Length: 349
Ligand SMILES: NC(=O)c1ccc[n+]([C@@H]2O[C@H](COP(=O)([O-])OP(=O)(O)OC[C@H]3O[C@@H](n4cnc5c(N)ncnc54)[C@H](O)[C@@H]3O)[C@@H](O)[C@H]2O)c1
Image 1 (spheres, rainbow, N blue to C red):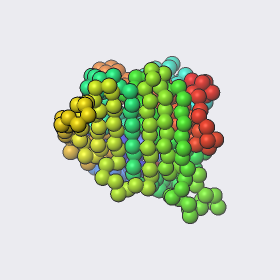
Image 2: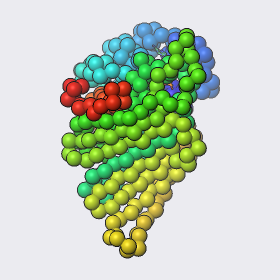
Image 3: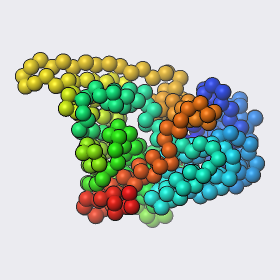
Image 4: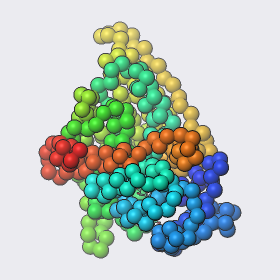
């Protein structure tokens, strides 16, 4: 799924050329070939990462394999002299994420973790305004994702925490990454109440029932005193907005609604005084929006990654960022399972 979204976005990215793809599953290669359309004839196809590493001549690589394969896949690609964008979550365990951070630090070219929610235009505008001080001194950050259940995947890998890292790592690493970015500090402790209560209950894969959280509340306390919370429901597909974020400071509150693209600014006015709410709309390029299912985020992330590949811009999402998001997600998974607060120091962070 995500590989195809990358191909569709690279197709509209100025100066990008797709020269090779790799996937061990033939039907996935067929889907990719369909997505490539007329350009497929010029694209080399490999049935393994090993063959790709030997035979492909590329400037940059995008990894969109299952979460639990990222480390293995990277082990085979780090010897290539090419920039790498690895999909989120960086890995399913802190240990594997650390290995990737260490290896990325000595890689010859830029390494980028695919935390693309940062690049959704309404989210980016929200982040910029909070950082510019629009809410005053930020004290509270709340993020809600209310959406559809996990989709079917190739080999059903996403039904089990062993393959994904668990929902709080797999899905929610995006939101923990946004929290770190917006708050500008590191997490100190995490409490998560969550379980699989509605989805996947009747599904069985080789006799095994899925074990992934489908609803949770998570609070994260940051070193600079800001508190953040994540409200996740994977059975709220009827909700008008999939993501909603609210940043509240000592001067105002700022909300963003996605996909509505609406920013709502509510300065403090004092008890019983008339509200002074201001609304603004953030536009998304229609071509970027149409090339994926992430409100243009994949396109804008690729534009920023391409700048880094060409040496014209910074790596905006490092391997260390990927590790930190995995670590908060891991803390939330432990917290939900053991019904207790998890200190990040327990995880070595
Ligand atoms: N950025 C986002 O918002 C976003 C959205 C969806 C998925 N993702 C991430 O993208 C990655 C892929 O997810 P997906 O939804 O596309 O899953 P998918 O099951 O649709 O696709 C995964 C593909 O990887 C292939 N694969 C399996 N093992 C491999 C290996 N060892 N080497 C190379 N290819 C291998 C599979 O055959 C399949 O074609 C995951 O890490 C996922 O978390 C990110």
